[in-house]
Image (cartoon, rainbow, N blue to C red; front, side, top):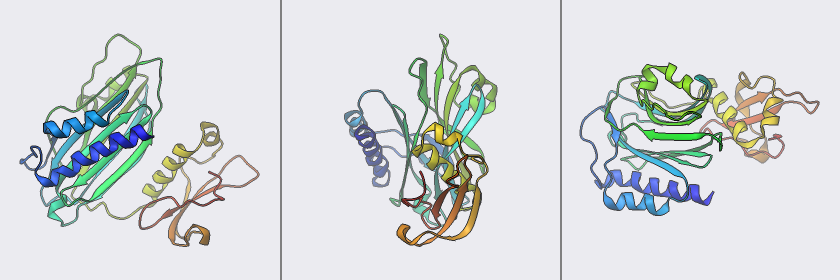
Length: 284
């Protein structure tokens, strides 16, 4: 965990420097591209990185037509989408300084960390646990060119693949255009981004269900997950109060049915922050 925090700190420092005109931020509009780091910035990442790691930093710059963007992780098994990890959503609104900033991606062992820092110093962080196959060969890498940003168009920022053969065809955006390529590998993780002219503020039932499913995957054994009947379609109730010992705030209530006489697993998602309430009796 200390290794993860260390590298994340390095990415955060680099991203924060975007608003201080350190490095060479992009000037073109509606594009995302690998960040051109100064020597000192690259040294921070090298200094805080240990053992096996992979890291990438991107600059983005958009005009006032765009109101928000999101970043997420997709997990493919033999070319079939196995799971989509809810990650980061940024509501830009009318704030000009949020229209450009930096995105950081870091992989360390079985953790994948994502970070966003806008020029207004608004910060977003998230980490996800990924499956590792120590017996398989691995290949990873970021998109290495400037990409035009279009409304609601998915952009692949990073690919991380496990494979058994002697070679791998890493295609960057080709994996988006020709998804059949993913079928060549038993396991692939893709980090994607999508910018939208619609605001990303506010939680929907679909987003809440995704947050809850991610939380259970992160904090429970595979055995426990297998006992949940409706893991893919949990019951989501919008108007709920968390128990007083959890804070008693307005929340979304998410119910997972399980094969157990003890009853369902219940999570409470705070309506304002989107965080899962840490209740002692939630059986998680």
